[in-house]
Length: 210
Image (cartoon, rainbow, N blue to C red; front, top):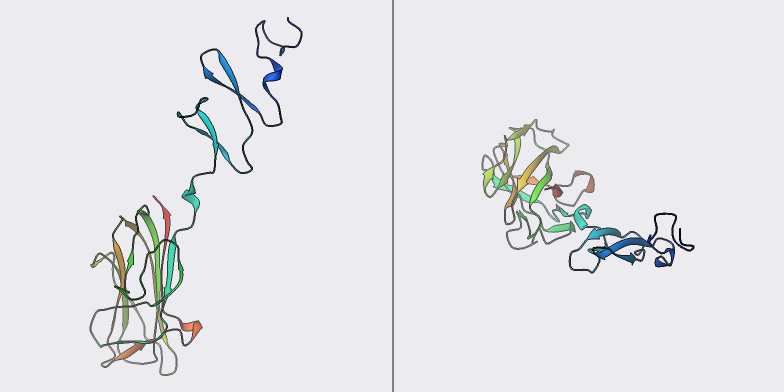
């Protein structure tokens, strides 16, 4: 065995090929060893055929990065009796990728480019106190109901009726989601806006996977 070589067969790789902690031994071609220096903290070793060694250190893919939107209302919305009505939203507490516009089509959450997948969608509606009829809610994708309508019992003469709904929905780029509601009080009835944070009407959608 030749002095100064790794303990292997004659002709083994020279120890001097590595220079620092974290160095890796790879190859640039057949029988051609090479060194890759350790990458920056929190990077991962990634295959890349455009590099000499076919490998590189890279920042992990952003698949785990949050993408979603949380909406609410800054004022009450009047809902006519016995009429399915789209709920509008003019306040964004979170909007990571331009899902919503506070003015144009502001009842909609629209799936942006590159964000197709399955969405966890939820809503809560808060109706002003009233003791007549029922309050209902459904989620629509591209104008079509995605599931059954959820109907909640009414509240009382001095407390709000709160109804909520959660659903996982598969969405393509350009699909839009809306909340529709019906109330049968016999007259106009308000959905409460942000005048009481404990009774807030809201609409949320979070991308949870492909």
